[in-house]
Length: 84
Image (spheres, rainbow, N blue to C red):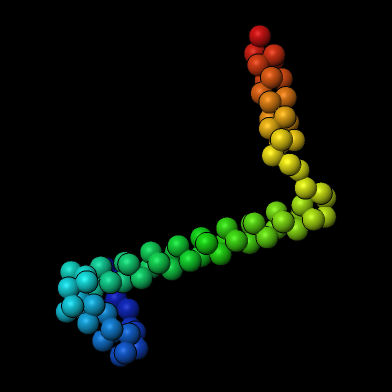
């Protein structure tokens, strides 16, 4: 079990969440908060990856979905040929 010190207003908010019936206990409140934080970090990492991909595309050029489909078909066909 982890014990954490939080500001009084945060503790009161968590207690109110339990009292209002939104959560069964304080542990559930903390778990939900940490899961939300984890999703936020994951979202930020995903957005950073998209921004990096966009910058790369601006620098190196864009590829249409048709071009990508053709390239993937080529790769798959080469893989099939190697298995034979």
